[in-house]
Image (cartoon, rainbow, N blue to C red; front, side, top):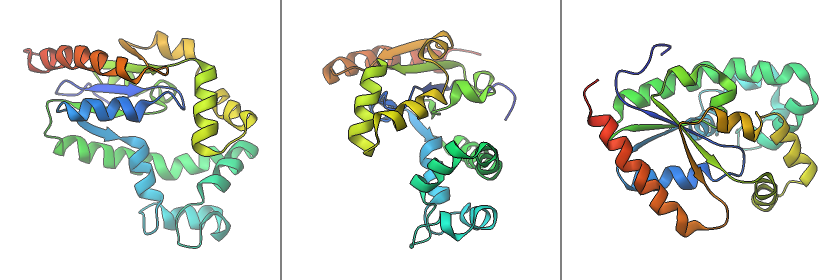
Length: 207
């Protein structure tokens, strides 16, 4: 899937805590097909998931929960403390995520597909695989507050995750479209409506 897509598609991204899922769900309500790589990764690493045998073989039983899922908290801490762990985990997950993403894209029957990719800018190859990049943006202070409340992490832990992602400025520089998502939920719907109309026009325009 290295060539530009045959049909119009959108890559949606944003930093941790920016509200990507909230915005993506609003597009889905309007008829877009969501292909969420984070949700795919969760499915692969839940009990019985396709990635579990390889994770067990590579990292050991200590990185699985009692019910057989990947222990995400322990793996997150390991990835941040052990330089090679991130590459080893990605070597397992990325090919599986790519295969499942391609399968889901072929089955998508909505008005247009939206690929929800948290690390879209970091991965490098996604820009060539979608027609437009939509960034969900908010202040860093808002990111920290939301993730601390949602995940029970310390500010230091949240900022460490943010430091492993591209900067806010780099993400915005890669955007074709931006939706600001601070603490004004009512402002999201008009912005989604505006972009949905644009995307419908682009999706139905001759190539």
